[in-house]
Length: 230
Image (cartoon, rainbow, N blue to C red; front, side, top):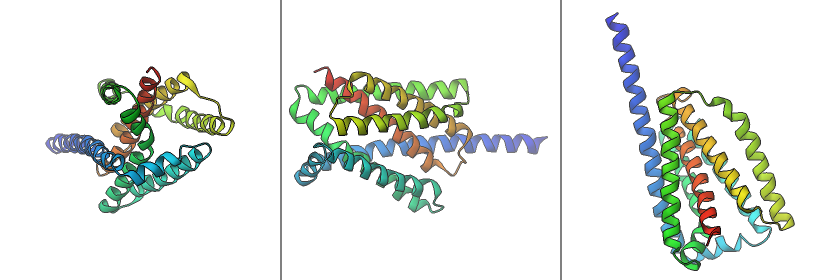
């Protein structure tokens, strides 16, 4: 009986340590994103290149490159048995996110009144919603794995609408951004549920990447909505 209790306590301690490592890596990811983004925004060649990819159908090239880069980074972080390769994959993902954020953050920072305040507001709202959704999963212990199908379908629909909007020149508008915020929120619930039920205790890098990706998606569309109000 004592051995069973000890094993249970050890298992619980390992899970708690896993949660700590995961969210510490999410925090490091956000910090790395801020540093890399600052460097990108103050490097004129990178800014010019990123802005050139927002013109017309070049945006599809940027999205395609982003998807290839992030998929490769995810495979490294999730499938590799080497901890160094997992972190390299995570870093590549962060760099890809920082690059695709260059145009929107550059516009907000340099072409909008109170652009810095808008970015801060978006960051605060993102953090608040992320914290609330995470707490919901931890407190209720509910299994949100059933959301996977909806996330997959929603993701394909979103990609299709983005491609169509780029090819045919129509604005996706406010409601698309609202829908993407809902999709990001669902993704956070799903990823956090996986954190509790799916990942092994040595997979904290992969778990952190999944949460970081959902967090960045949420931040992007909250920022877009706030920018559209000005």
